[in-house]
Length: 542
Image 1 (tube, rainbow, N blue to C red):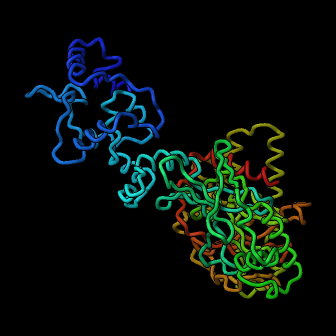
Image 2 (cartoon, helix red, strand yellow):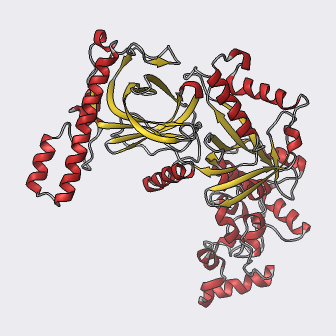
Image 3 (cartoon, helix red, strand yellow):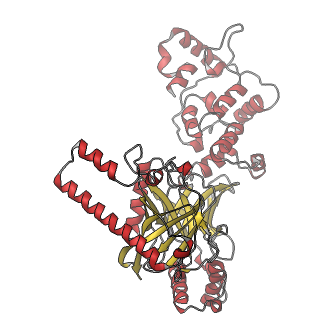
């Protein structure tokens, strides 16, 4: 703003005689241009009378531009300030600046403030900053300007754009808030119906925000089956907001709770209660309906980030859908942390709630599966995994002993590194490629894969070839997350978009498939911010 002030001949440059004379000449021709004190984007370009607005619009947007007396410099010399530039050029310059900077620009002088009333500037900011590709000229019919859309809708609610996890007890969820046309909509993403893990995600709107008149944006609850109704959004603090429905009677159905349950069951599971013969599964479904329906879309959301990626990662990290027995399909976030990979639940269940680390993969310990004939034998696979588990325990005990004995000498450290299985990454952490003793692009070709006899899988259509397997642990617990413990298992990488996990103690197999949705505004600002987010959601739902 100080630079703009000097260019305009006001502010810190008042001591310059030549600019001072030019300023006095402009003041004599066009009146005072004192800086404005307004900093709100909603007010940038505001103020002034109707006649002044019409004059500015006529000069800037209609016909051949006519220089304002205060902006016209003497013929034959370059302009000494921005005020001497043609208005249409100033519109182009101002339109290329971030919308958050325009209020400061409007404070410089009344001329800048008048130019910032040009809707072309705000139309460009809506398009470039928020991807709003709608024909914004249609807004003129409703009397809403592009500046209103930017300031009262997009800028005001910019902090809720991105990915969020609702606080719904152990169940969690995945909310994506996006700019959708002339609306901001909160879409709740739901896994496909069990057990079709490769099917695309389902989604439904929970709320929307739009600008129907110039006064303020309107928040509407979309929950239920009676159409949009009055709602409220409150930004509690950074990376947290809450929603409230002001007309919960719109969520009720004429047939009472029984009709509401049957409707929810068809949407959630794609079937009726009569189709579900497993008694324990019926209990879990009823429990989830009773628990989740009590919120009536009055929820608190906390921001989540997509995991950062690295060229050394085994596959691209991200969100996956996974099978969890009677609990159905759940959403898991796969992230890489040096020689470890973690699967964190975004949605959960009464046994292992959302936010908990459902699987951990030890990338330093690849597993060599037996040949296809012996792979059918569960005891053979169990023997291999338990041997690696014992090796991992010995290595952990040796590491603890070394820490107790103090720092090792450089010579001993180099010898230990040479004897350890696999290689080391550039930063000292073993990577999956190093663990295999070869670069990832030279990894062995796929090998046949089949589940051992007695291992239960809800999805029989799992891949019959895999790239590589690793030792890992899976988290199991009783109802209410009681007596949680980590048990050994096998991580099976099938391809870039699918992996599996064999739970040895449960004799169960989970298949995971990548969620192929391009989420916007979901990147973590740093690795530290992502790790902190994981820690927070784990403690929240513990």
